[in-house]
Length: 335
Image 1 (cartoon, helix red, strand yellow):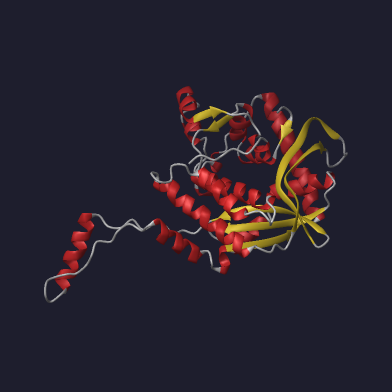
Image 2 (tube, rainbow, N blue to C red):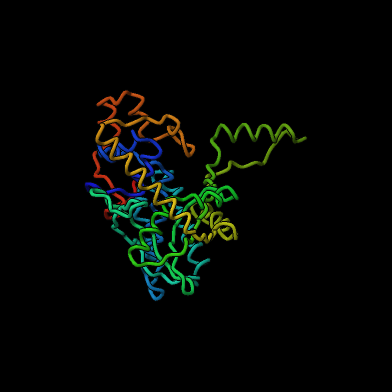
């Protein structure tokens, strides 16, 4: 898609122009996807299906069937099995917690295509359009809100404060208003990821060492200890279900967006778009090394940058994938 900017593209350029170039000019996508991102996509797609289905349908069964299909190797792959359990626990508990919703769903996966306008003159940009896709639009009373799904490892004051800085949501709000949806704010639908792990049990060596230690503490010099076996699927599922009965496992945060916030957003988007076009024309893409390890993980493109953009690294670690894939049909995440 030429002359198109999405939030993902704008954000990539703002963080690192070289990353923008690799993804949105060279169309390089990392072959391996971070587990956290893949799992978030599974939950996101499941929630979309949950809200697409009517109350009269066996919604939860259909959603869980969809989750099952995302983890085809769960019987032989411990990582898949762990995330499969986690996804099913989250969605089962979510269905119980929000059996009666506070909002009415107006639209899901709502796309917009809008002109990028100079905030001072109001003139549209001659070559660039802004496009995007919102998770959902919901109505509470007489007001419209964006609905944004989030999976999080923890939830504290810093996490909630950070939601106000979410440029993506402000951008969606502004341009969906232009499309006829008078959105006043956003409802963040936050689902926590339990940090429970399946218990692996003991190896024979570990068992013998523990039994000898217990025997040494016993006056008889014997121990009746038994080897700890790996946790069964049923037992692990039960532990997860108990964890998700906690009130703090799910959270809804409602944020209103001020007119000043939206005004500043327009200036920011226009300036980033201008810089993007300038870099394109000059063929100059700065490398922001301060971004290489943001969000507690390395950038997907770090190996390529470190190698001096070696062609072998490019061929082995990256595929050619059209830009703006978030606007294409949703892919099934691979684990």
